[in-house]
Figure 1 (cartoon, chains in turn yellow, green):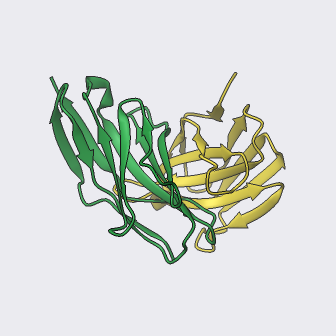
Figure 2 (cartoon, rainbow over the protein chains, first blue to last red):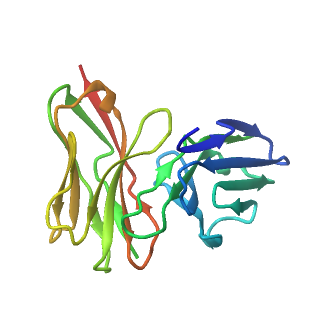
Figure 3 (cartoon, each protein chain N blue to C red):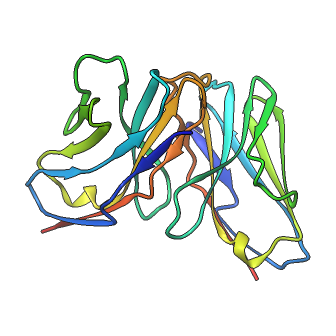
Length: 114
Length: 114
């Protein structure tokens, strides 16, 4: 496989469930990102892992928990979500975090919280 | 803080014609990079073109060109010879030397008419 892959592509979960989103990049990059894309809102950066250092957006609720076991894999663990967390969750990777490092995105996971 | 503004929520263009998608940005950082991404209905974000703040010439990539006007803080995307497959959401994004994270605009939905 090439590029950035995400699984599952679609997920429906109840508010009491625990689930995880998975992202894998095959580009040899050293930085990975989680974004949230809600309807009619700009993409919102949730977490960045760069050289195994985590940078997070302080406004992200604790019910979202990232994990980056190595530079190729990134997880987003979900628990006790709310209906307003329904959105498209996009993973991306880049080589470094410099100005020229364009990010390559996965196809996203469409999450619906019921 | 950095900010991206896309004032056109939707645009229509006739097939084979050119179209300009507007983007203005705000940052106090002298070093920054500007990106355009395309998001088809499938959800994946596709990198189109990049412009660095110190680049002397406007970026071009095939049918895509970026009209970079630094004094006006604008970075409009020009698509020449539109094709039906160009119908998608288009996002302008910026990364600055200090923030080191992508900030996205709200997007423009482009529809190419046959």
